[in-house]
Image (cartoon, rainbow, N blue to C red; front, side, top):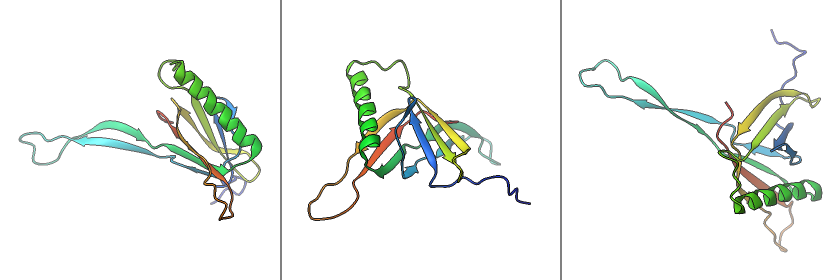
Length: 150
């Protein structure tokens, strides 16, 4: 039986906070994925099966996308400038540079689930394609690499 009091997570309702900074609203988030890699071991004389050993855990990059707006895009640019400054000073603070929290919400804005990313680094930012010959929304993308969320 379905619990009608339990609210479902909506793809359109999520929040992203990086290094404790709310970087504004985003319209798309991809990359919440993990792959558990394994090694098959070949043993001499064992013809029944191949033992499996756990190998590396591979986390995919997170890609955030949204229409640009003055306030949110400015917060993002300031955060990126801070990262560039710490890179130039070689101030990496040992290991990962920071954290990110992605929170999935229901229709009332209440938390349904969340993912806490550790060792977060910006891996890229794509600005809008500008052209006087077309009309469209200016879109920006932020790519984050991380050391995991499990």
